[in-house]
Length: 500
Ligand SMILES: N[C@@H](Cc1ccccc1)C(=O)O
Image (tube, rainbow, N blue to C red; front, side, top):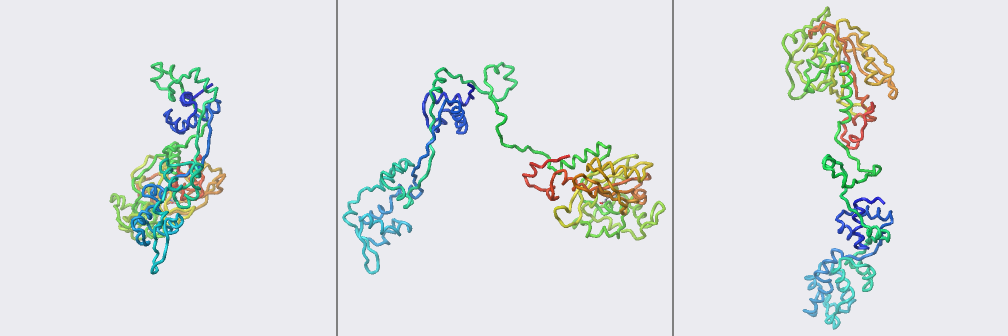
C-alpha cells in the first residue's frame, strides 16, 4: 500500500492516540489543517482510519453576555441599589443601568418578586421586598456563569438549567452549530502501525546535490498527481496589442525592410505636411482634421537648404511642375502637432538619405480627431513605408501591396481603386478580402510625386504606402471593440490570445 509522507505521519500519531479530535491531530502531526484533512481522507479511503463528523448545537455568549458576566445582570445591579436605599426612583437606577437596560427593569424586578411598584406624585417608586432582600442565585445566573467559564456549552446542557431561547431573548447568548471531527484508527490501521512504518524524508525536487551525494537512494520522492487542478498563474507577458505590433515588425524585417524610428509623437507641420508637398491651404491641414499643440506651439525647421527647396516646390514647383502657386509660410510649417500619419517618417528618411535600392518601414502611433466608438479611436497605428529603386513603376507598387495584404493580413484577394493624396501620383486605395472580415479597407499608396522627392534630394522613383492595422489587430485578437486594444481590463490582458 502506497502512503504519502503525510499519511504515514498521521497514521503513526493515530496509532499512539487510537482516536483523536481533528484539532489534536493537527497539533500532534505539526501539519497544517488542509494537509491533515487530506491525509485523513486518504487513510480513510485505504481503510486505515475513520473520520466521524458530529454536528452539535451550542450556545455561546454574545458581547452583551460577556459584559453581563463581568459587571452583573441588570436586575442584580438594580437590586444592589435597592438594598442600599430600600426605595428608589428610576432616576436612581439610571446611575447603574444603561438606557436600554432601564426600560425592562421594572418588569424584571416584578417578575422575580424582588420589588413592589407604586406611583407617587406621578413618579414610579420601587420598593424592595422580603424576597428581594434574600434573593438567591437563579437558573439564568448559573447558565451565565457556566457560559462565562466554558465559552460555549452544548444546548442540551444549558437547557437543563434554562431554555436557550430565554438567553437569546435577553441577548445574552446565541446558538451556533459546530462540527466536531474525530478520527479513529481502524484495526487494519493498527496492524500496519504494529508492523512498523518507515517514515522517510520526502523530496519533491531532484537536485544535483541529491544525485552527487547519492542521497537520492535514501529519500522518498513525492508523487504528483498531474491531474490535480491547480491555481492558474499569470506570468508577465507582452500587452496583446504590443505583441501584435511586434509580430508585424518581424514580418517586415523578414521581408528585408529597414525600420525607421523616431522618439517623439510630436511632429512639425513641416514634416507632417509640407515636406510631403501638401499645400498649406489644403483642407486636411485645418484643425478639424488634425490636432495642434497648445504649448509649445512651434518647433524648429530643418536645415535652410532643404526648407528653401520645399518652399520652392510649393510656390513655383520643381521637376517641370508649376507648384501650388501661393506664398509659403515658414511660421506655419513650424507649428507642432501630434503626428497624423506615418508618412511623415518616410519624408524624414528621404531627406536624411536612403540606400538605393532600399526598402523602409515604420509602425507609428498617429492621431486624428474622431468620435470615439467601438470602431473608431482618435489614436491608432499605421504601418507606413516606401521602396526606392531606379526602375520602379506602378506595377511594382501593386505587386508589393498585394504581398503585404497576403503576408500581413492573410488576405485572399485584393482590389485597388484610384484615389487621391497630395503627395502621390498616381494614388491608389486598397481593399483586402479577408475570409472572416470580408472586404477591409487596407490603406493608401502611390508613387511619391517628384515635387516631393526631388525637394528632399531623391532622384529615383519612390513607391509609398500607409496602412491602418487596428482592424486587423481586432480580428487577430478576437475583439469587437477597438477600445479594447488599450484596455486595462486585467482579465482580458491575461487571457487575450494572438491568433496568427
Ligand atoms: N498617409 C496616408 C496613406 C498613404 C501613405 C503613403 C502613400 C499614400 C497614402 C494616410 O494617412 O491615409
